[in-house]
Image 1 (tube, one colour):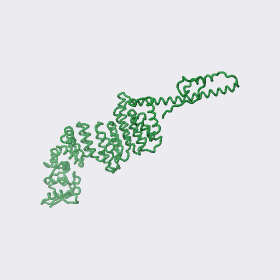
Image 2: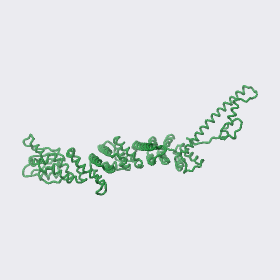
Image 3: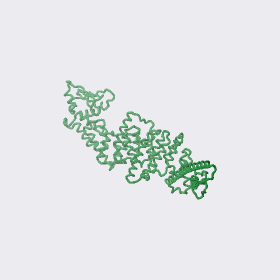
Length: 567
């Protein structure tokens, strides 16, 4: 009785049973080596079905070829076992999992109908067309089995047939679901290698599939294939994740870049939280700049839908304990602002004065985001101010949210000096704070003195003018403050010039009196001019009113000066 020769435990029990079936009264005359498995078989049974083995035996230089090596047969020992059973007429089961490998093995062994009727090639082709490719699930499973059968599976058009069937049935399921949940078909595609998944997506696009349909498949595939990276939307993932250059990380990076390359051109096809998770993964895996820039552009286009949590996902590492490079966030906000500027210019408006509702919504989100990241000690003033200054001034109706972020930053960085605190506060307009925020600012010891004086002076002006809080206009108040500051400076300069002139005239009069040696004084040009200047002095008695001026010499008493809180 001939049995397969077992070199190690990798030879399966199925092969042992095959050897028993192969055993006949006639002794075996050839040993077929497939990898580490050896099969004792009969030449005449193999030659009857396989033209390839027949050629090997005929063309062999050995008189009696006793050993044949078929280690490179597609599918390995298990598939050759089934092919050998077919040669011996032993029944075995063809399934969606092994049909592609059997088809490739049959082609390799040249078991075609041209050599023998109803051979293994035609049997596997019939199963493919009638059974395996009759459903989406079957086509996907066959396509999955082709991953290790390339390039022969591609040459035999098995891959293309599976892609055509899978893409066609996926498009039908997307429009007319046959089961629940409606997107069940996207789960079926997740078992595929990214190269085969790309072929199906490309085929679906050529069939006119909608962008949202393509997006649904890509989202499901990304969340399954990069489960630990993409599906964690919290920003506080597994602490053991390592961004080192391991083989797994390299494979994940290549997979991510392939997924990003598949994104349809419609920018709004994907939810922004998914794009933010993809970008965070790209930063973590150190993906190419082109990959990250593509994701940044897509996020900036729909930034009005962003939430604080979405921006935080971009900003922190997976353990949530350290900040990523904030350049991506800065570029995203900058891209959105630039887009809004272009829209405003196209519509003939002034972007500095009137901002869209989307811009105002983004400004509020950015201020809240700054408040969240302000607590981290490694956040520098330049990065904090850099993000805050990206938002146009006109996009903030009030600066309360920005003031809150600044206050949090100052509290988290207590060692800043006065100049550094003023630099942090420079991004805020104190005159755009609400009444409650101004009251808080006037009592906030963390703020620099300049900001506190601004807040106090604002309320002082409002009390003096009797303006109602609800109807006050920050721009009008700012103009009034600037006018008052300018007037004070002009008054000081004019007072200085007049005093200098007065002292000069007095010196001339003293010199003239000494030279006349006691002679009667005669009105001179300089004395007349001195009296005239005295009459024109607008600051006598500390008032701008000249109705009470007398004709004597100007009073040298320095008028009272109103104190103004100016920066």
